Image (cartoon, rainbow, N blue to C red; front, side, top):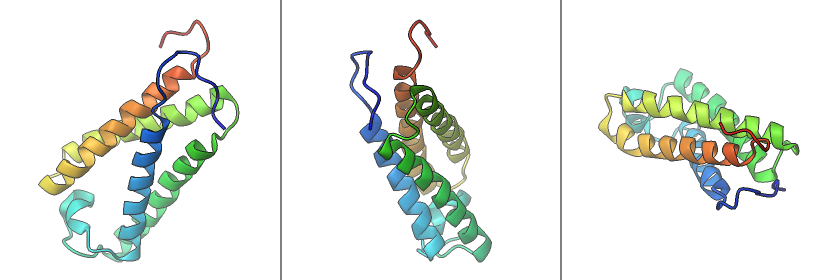
Length: 137
């Protein structure tokens, strides 16, 4: 359930969900042994990731998947708490954009910089729509 929009702007929630879902699915595939090492973790491992990075991907899948579930379900119910979820996603995705931009792997940069940047901007947009009346930031 979404909190009604009062700003008259179009919701970017579907964009946030698509990005979160894509990132979650990618992390699940890495944890399961998909040979995508060249576009993850700076491209240091071509093919299947070693067990330590597969475990890290499993943890990342849990975090990103939890964020996707919260956004999809409109949880938590209060606008203030929903705003905190969106701001957290925006912040983590923004940092992720910078980290991916610094990656030595060109394929990783080409894929993940745009995805994480779009996620960061879209989540920020949604958070701004949930701000209390009279707050401009």
